[in-house]
Image 1 (spheres, rainbow, N blue to C red):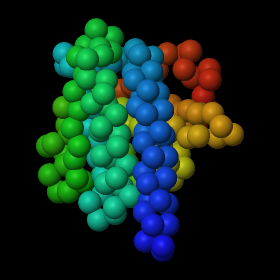
Image 2: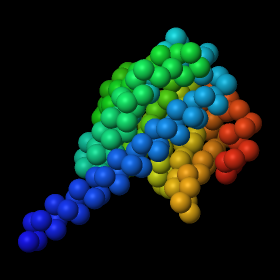
Image 3: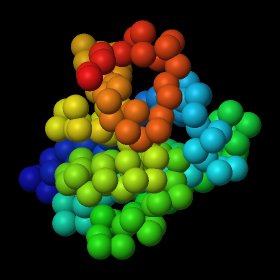
Length: 176
């Protein structure tokens, strides 16, 4: 009986993560449509790097779900650019693996400092969906009161070489 209850709880948790991942990826693509500097930064193709902490299961689970949802959008173009993605463990070679990306999605549990240094050096937009990253990455997507909210740090976006359209800024909480 206990085993069945545990399995049921686990399946419900996975389903909730999948639903939230669908929303997040849909919003991620919407953000990229509002990104005015994307064509200059993308080098002919939008590449989304999903990074995670291999030592934390929840980080890997989130990354796998996000990458799976991105894969469902594989035929979609953003600003007439093809989209590709990869999933990467944060390790000592992460810079060389993600340096040509247009966007870095940071899963929960990742120490953002190293990723932020890479993003600033190579002019890559950073996005996450956890409160711990507010004021630390370019854009954070949070579910608040049954709707998704964008938290945008304009100082970081400027350092990343990202120019977001006013329409997205107008509906977001802004940090400077």
